[in-house]
Amino acid sequence: MRLSVLAPAFLACGLLATAPAAAQAPQGGGDGAEQVVGLFSATCLNFAGDVAALRGFLEEQKAPRMPQQAEAAFLAGRAGQAFDTSYQTTKLALVSLDDGSCEAVAEHADGAKVLTVLNQAARENGVALTPLGGQPPTGKPGVTQTAYGLTLVGRPMHILVSTEKPAPEAVLTLVPK
Image (tube, rainbow, N blue to C red; front, side, top):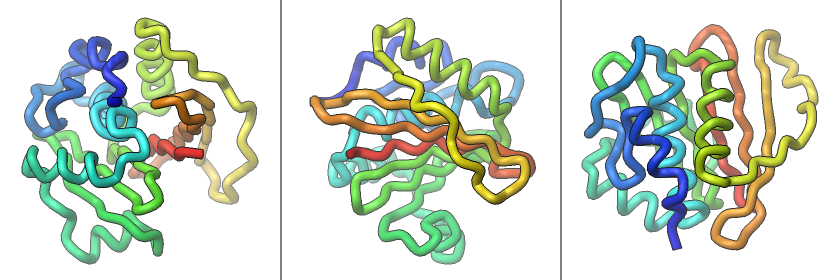
């Protein structure tokens, strides 16, 4: 069972839950907020915890794997694969971890707008995002983290939205529990 409830909201964001970020025209003024949230929905949420299906989808869509050095940087010692899902001037990456976690990364995205787009799409589609309270400091100045709980495919999961300046400015992480 795939999450399709968020798909309609991302039509307005320039991304479909059935097509990769690279296949869609971006909306808005070049900020990656809509694109990174759309990418997150189309991949991480749509294939929640199903690593094989997510990677199969990315392969079908011809999303290229990152070069080895870039992939190693995105994985930061974790087991998984990183894909270049950039579109035009919006640099995006999708990180599929072997444990079922998934990350959508935008080089440039307004953090407040990312949170607004994510919450608005969830509300419009009746998806309950439960705020999990303040996150402990990351030890890195300028990094803001916001966590949510939700249930997908009958399983509890967490979303962690990390934003900072300079790039990467937004990372949305889905962690199956």
